[in-house]
Length: 213
Image (cartoon, rainbow, N blue to C red; front, side, top):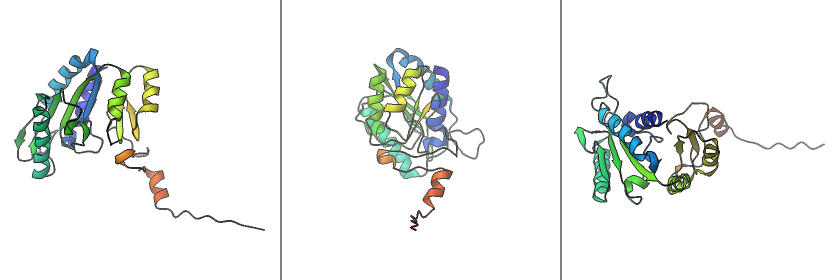
């Protein structure tokens, strides 16, 4: 469902100006529907209200400070210099507000592809197979949450087994979360879980008691 995939992914990427650990950043899409999805994402990104966070209509407000703004803009500029195309946004709006940015054709080695941007930036990369998409997704030192949009049950089960992430969300954005569920990553994204049960255990001193008669 390309409409649902585009809407959920864009909301995850641009809401809160992309300043969430699980904001969508990289989109890997089958080449057969790449252009269709890119068209949808381009239209959504161009229409996202960006500006004053006190305005109820604003979706993408400012990033945390001028240093973050400059770092994000530098990452965008570096990606473009390496061959990426700006499909929407790409520059500042006012103050620390960055226009919701959509990039395509980003080289795999570009910083914006392999480091956490923590800003309103989304990249779209065409893949030639499901297996290739899994390989590219795993080719990062991070592993917090991933999302997969598919109607195939075999692909769903394969992705759940093979994706090296602490959580895999199917047919919704990687930022979807319910408080009771275990939340945490692998690799450089951590090795523990948050959530009520895990928090209770973290705050509990485990003690072994042996009774002998």
